[in-house]
Length: 229
Image (cartoon, rainbow, N blue to C red; front, side):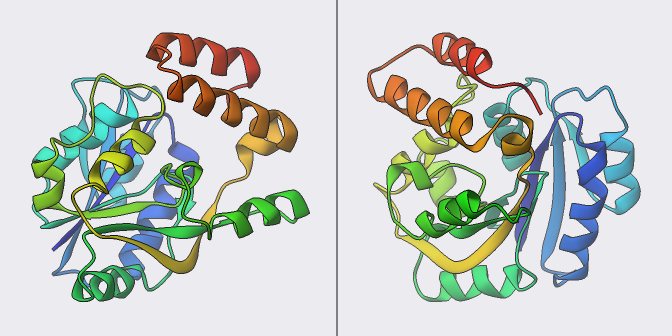
């Protein structure tokens, strides 16, 4: 079984459409959809429950903590982490199953943005590269539960860069696959700010992370550089 885990916070606009997409393109006896919420003040959880997902209120807010809490409740032997504003390919179930049969333990997709911007098309093209900057969560991430538990899951103390840290750690113990198909990613962060501002912010935070900056220092700097979306 594959457990699809979606961390949310005020995602009422997106969550219903995502669950419907996931449900339409899956094997109902071999998948569960879990929404792990960080205390939304909108109708995220109600919409998710109506759409057929298992809903959880995480005892700790933060993407890493919410995903880890859901993983502890998941029934599947494969965990698939998906952001609420991202749409996996129609054949996601078959893609992950094929990767597992090929001997891979974890992996991600490529990027495609819901925008006609040529700069975001460049970003999407660069997602083909197996580099550190490509190990965020936007491209979604699957991992076998055995490996997830072996490495101790997500670091729940992290509020930023948690998926990069997790992937780097997991890859030391498992075989990593980049599936050559794109997921559709919301361009809302780029539309709210600008391509250049987001690129500079991402570069700055990655540089700070590699130099050992504290979580709070990185969070404060990121908030200074970008408007929330």
